[in-house]
Amino acid sequence: MAPPIIRFVHATFGFPGTVALRDMSLEIYEGEFLGVIGPNGSGKTTLCRAILGLLPPLSGRLHIFDCSCEELRCHHRARIGYLPQKGVLDRNFPVTVLEAVMMGRYGALGLLKRPGKADRQIALDALEKVGMADYQDNALGLLSGGQQQRVMIARTLAQQPQVLLLDEPTTGIDLTTQHSVLDLIRQLHRDLGLTVLFVTHDINLISPHVDRLLLLKGRIVAAGPPEDVLKPEVLQQVYEKDLLISEHGMVTVRDYHHH
Ligand SMILES: Nc1ncnc2c1ncn2[C@@H]1O[C@H](COP(=O)(O)OP(=O)(O)OP(=O)(O)O)[C@@H](O)[C@H]1O
Image (cartoon, rainbow, N blue to C red):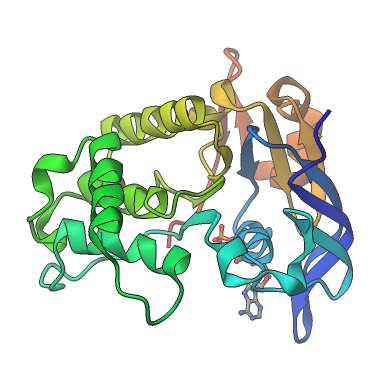
């Protein structure tokens, strides 16, 4: 088997005065589709920042593409396409769809190099992949939430990443669009062979489609195939009284706070 592309070895991450993720040991393999779940403040965003090499471990080790994360250089980071949690975009934000996607090229180019024709073509191809090519000259701020999310996914694709790191990509958009964004990500995973980490609070949306689920609460509480993680006795450790499981196996968590 090929070596893992991301490897945590007893790694602990935190901030002054706070340990956010303790003693993580985990290996992620090329082409895996991993769902990351856990309540508010459980360390999901911290995990993303660590994988981006932005937060070196306080103790233990983290290896990404065979380098220690402290050594992660720009060209390594460019291989990780990161979709941050969706902020509210000012409707007047003066950038077109194509311009926004072109920003995805900057990491690969390095600072001070101007994007050329080939970069523009890569950006257009990315827009094609997410079904937004017809909108290339539109103002980004005037698109719907779901359309903006597709454009943001195209921006990460323009990086030509090996790993897609998606922090709540379906939060704050309507249910139909949530499914279409998930379908898009599954298709990209399949067609481009990307390794996907999909952070979400929506356990039911993601579970049927992932190879493994990672359940966090300040540490890894469980990691494995969804059927192993989605057991009441496992979930209860994390969600306690907020957990509701229906007869049909649907999992509901009460009082999830959206940002
Ligand atoms: N910049 C920071 N400085 C200090 N503490 C932080 C910082 N960022 C996060 N934390 C703390 O680290 C812990 C994990 O936070 P993190 O944002 O990773 O959780 P999360 O699972 O992404 O939460 P949410 O679902 O609410 O987005 C929390 O206790 C949080 O308060």
